[in-house]
Image (cartoon, rainbow, N blue to C red; front, side, top):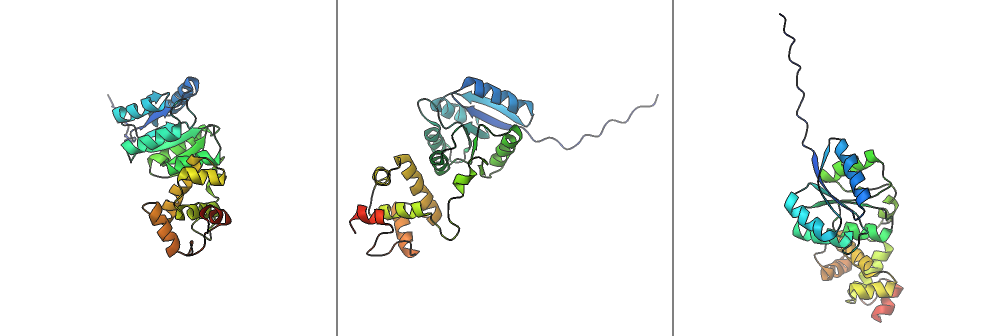
Length: 233
């Protein structure tokens, strides 16, 4: 009796990407888990409806990527992200949220998010975003990417960041900068983090020193009219 040759096996499939889902809407979370699991490329190893639980599960389950909502009761997603990055600086977090607010985007990126997409994203785009974040890339969803492109190409800092740098020169705190500019303290903190990143400065004093070195700040004058008023120059 003739025997059929055994089918040739292809290259082994990569292991699924392990996911932690954090969202305080159980229906949304369950639907997302089912959708991602069906593809076979992902394994939802844990779910949380609040920040403290998310931190515990991250340590206990060692997922590859965390999908994290911004708006949650109690500890919000930005604070959860900040604490998660403190306990695990290598944590890869993709913000999945309904918010298209520039403030939330900037704060999430400043806190260490690897990506930011909205819940209107298509399933295939979300899968691609997860893979990109897992691979070490940064992802900004199309519905919010307009907020990430506001930095002028002819300078290191945007006009608002130059203004914030002027306040840093005079030693203002994040809370004072927020009050003087009419923005939240969280947004002011995000601007300061963005400035330090753009100038490769280790701290606020270093950012001011780099500002003088690069000509962004000048001795005897402040960067902006608002900074001049605040600093009394």
